[in-house]
Length: 389
Ligand code: APR
Ligand code: PHB
Image 1 (cartoon, rainbow, N blue to C red):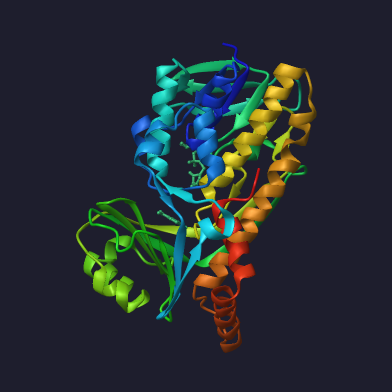
Image 2: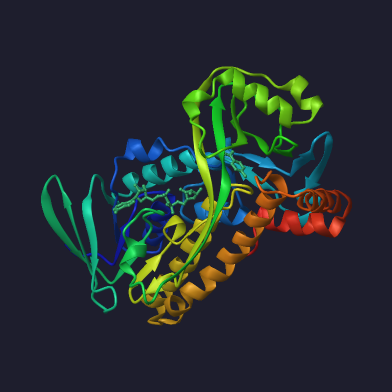
């Protein structure tokens, strides 16, 4: 088999890239290790930057997002009983859109199917060959049969545990990593959200986030120890702990109910450089991970897709390699800015096991500075709504 771009991974990065390439007349085949239901069963963040929304529009898949997504013009930030609002609309002129990643992925799968796009599920043993030549190919097996696809390019959109990053030789690759000494225990519950905007809350007991999917589906998180087991957290214990971490006015408004999902996610900052090796390009979680504070994961994947799409269009439409040659540098420049923001916001909002009295004073001062300083709020808002591509 032959195609122009083999895309490894059918998560949001791979699907968005595939659909955008299709819109611009470039063929691709997506190879996904799991089933579609498995991919759609993953629960991830749900805050979209304008840049992401525009890519979905360009891909022709923004209909449901516009109908069902909610524009948020600001967010609340609290420290104990101190609370203030960051007004994205006033500070940047832009909102964010709350629409779950699962729904984004569902819309992209529907579009790929409607266009007869090729997505091969349940692939095993994916292996990338000759990526450092102009004629790469990918081998894999499906239903016990070995297969081969020849292509012009390979897009590694296979997440943090995929094969693409590991295909880049160690002497070419540099990895930067920070592991945070805590996780997020998250629950989904069929209850109305406690507020119509998100609340990023911190307290003596640690971080909490009140988020949502729709009018009757709430997503809440609390900072927890990575040694905790989600099964040991009863729903009651979760709600009690959440109540201790959010301002009193919201404790009174909080509607609780049974959780329909409960899991713990680690917090990690990770970047691999470069994001290109010959004809192999990394996109999304394959190349970088951010802690979820600020919801930059999916949005940063989208900016990679944007830069790669432009590089590939440049190649096919203008016979120029300038776009693909500049891909890694351009993508990494924005990736590191998202890393900085996610690290900063995580540092501001969490309790650290080794935090000294000095560290706590600095954290409080940082919070007060953000609360009282318009310029600090503007910088936060610009990062939260998304830096330009
Ligand atoms: N072969 C084929 N597919 C693979 C392989 C492999 N060897 N390894 C992993 N995959 C698939 C996974 O099953 C998954 O569906 O690649 C996909 C990668 O998807 P994600 O991990 O979701 O990564 P990405 O598409 O880059 O999405 C960006 O934004 O909110 C963040 O972390 C969140 O998923 C999110 C991300
Ligand atoms: C979520 O709704 O899951 C969510 C929202 C904002 C974040 C992280 C997660 O910063």
